[in-house]
Amino acid sequence: MEILIAGAGRVGYNIAKILSKKHNITVIDKNEENLNYISESLDILTVQGDLKDTLTYQNLDEKYDYYIAVTNSDETNILSALIIDDFSKIENKIIRIHNTSYSLTSLPEKLKINHMIYSNTITVLNIEKLIHLPQANNIKDLSFTNMVLISVNSEISINTEEINSDKISVISIVKEDNIFFCNKACTIEPNDLIYILGEKEKLKKILKILAPSQPELIKNVLIFGATSLGIEIARVLVGLDLNIKLIERDINLAHQAAHLLQEDVMVINASYDDESLFKSENLNASDLSIAATKNDETNIMKSLIAKKYGIKKPICVNNNPYYHSIMNSLHLPVIRGPKMNTVYKILEEIDSENIVFERFFMGFEGKIFIKKIFINKTINKPKENSKVIIIRDNKIINLFINEETFEVLEGDVIIYFNTSGNKSWITNL
Image 1 (cartoon, rainbow, N blue to C red):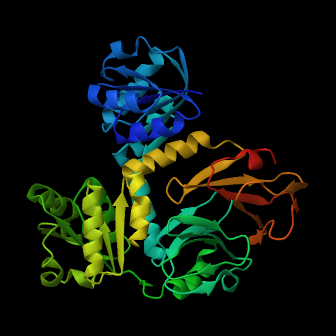
Image 2 (cartoon, rainbow, N blue to C red):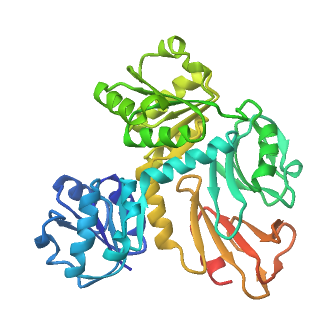
Image 3 (tube, rainbow, N blue to C red):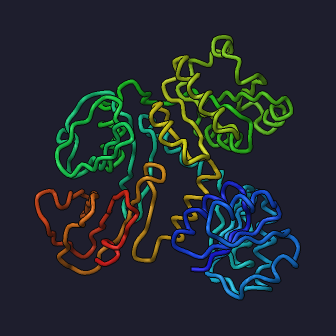
């Protein structure tokens, strides 16, 4: 496909890096340094120009399958989505938006935008899920089913046969960055990162066994960073009747947060490096901390400090995909930040077809493919290392444990996990 990306920052770069493996990519930006870095790193075309200037668009191709606007400016993304129609025929438009108030407008219809991605909102919703299932590290919804995929660091030794049922299935185990799909009985050991599919209520019981030190109920929350993300997180969590404390070292941002959040949140203006705060402000009584600054390294350090002072659930917001394995090794629950959520959402949207939906898991390491079956047929076992399950009548069936073929029925949902990203097996079913 021909894909045009507006914005050469971290988001644009990561999208271009992944998509350029299969598609023809062009990136537009006025930042010459960013464009030079991209053109030296990737085999793509670059165009230097101001996206608010119509002259920038004059030498573009006549047609693109996708136009993706991911600059840091909502206004630039919206305006460019309007201007581009005068110079190129665009089949699909995806734009990144920070300001959630645009969701109340008819902009998508007027500008023929297929998807407006509210990057902060995705991160906040993922954090909200963890409030309801706090012993998990991460929770992922999947198409066609009410079951969810969670990850958790095990604190005990246990065999997967003691966990698996028709409502729960251990999908994979990560041991020191090595990934093992559990197609037969596997032994889980302390510090292993486990991915489990199942019903939420059943998962709660398993999580109590696997991670008994993690909080079962969240009441007190500590947030680092009065960024737009930190403020949005605080607003949502206040609505869940939680006690929130927010720390911000910049006095102006702290005042702004205090004004916006009023008396619902205690805003503390202090350095993130002041560890004495944990005692003086009783921060160590928090059930959960969320490091939501704009700096990934700061978020890692604050999460580690929170863990040191006894906070059982330190959540680290991360915008760098290459930090994912590092944070897993530190046993820090990772929530994708707004930038990475935008990247993942766009990649999943472009790669998903009407018949096969795609999702990432284990950072960029693993792929999930989901397909609903509309006709009875016999299917053969995939040749590559993978895990295949079927959801039938709200029950899990683990496929190809002892057999090479399996009979699938109309209405079955097939979920296919692998690390290659190859979807030909499930596409051809």
